[in-house]
Length: 298
Image (cartoon, rainbow, N blue to C red; front, side, top):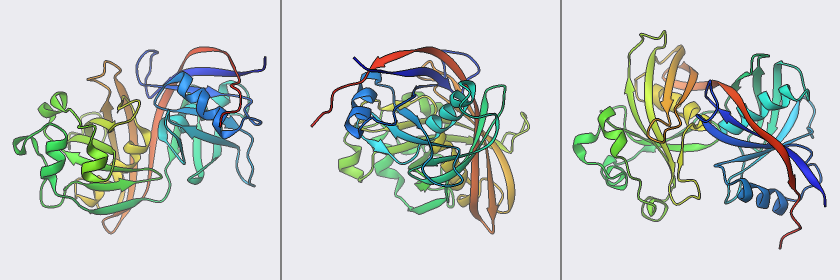
């Protein structure tokens, strides 16, 4: 019976059993997509990443990223987790790396201490959305809303798109996302965010966030790197971070899930539009072993 090696890690935390869980699978070059999907369902984390040899010039390594439902082109905590875990296993040295994934070739900087900084793909920004149905879908009321004329709900992304809903800090523990969101609003990925321009920790501002995939097998994420990158795009568009230059911001997530996480980010903007964003965090090893390769499915 054939097996492949794996390691489970916790991402965006300085200690195990916090942050976001990730399974990193090695030696899967000959696995079919259905086999990767079956392994992902077995781990049943929000995402599983398969660390593979690169297929294009300039890439250090390649990843394929799966949720329990399907393969996705990009995600933040699998990218950070794969880079640090691959470095620790001696697949490549610390330093400047290039990750090949469905979103293209993305720069990643890995330190020997076990942190990684990921640069997202080209920023995207959607049109403003009506806050009322989003508040209803989050189980909140108009009194919980914290948007203004510029900082309105809208989609933003740096490789993976999220809809951002600004709320008051005290509303976050009461958020209950309606699993019918994809049917009622036409999307499933939503980040409910409370923003403070507090710079006491040396950042331009800090956010407290809860991030959901409505109707998914894992409906809430304790740390979401792709949403952290996209938040910078949204903050610049909403006038909550400077329109020019590079700003820093920190995100606190996973508190309500008892898996506290911290994501340190930058966003660079020109003339009121984000041009690039980064997210940085540590990765903690938790468990390792081998798992049986599933038979071909379908």
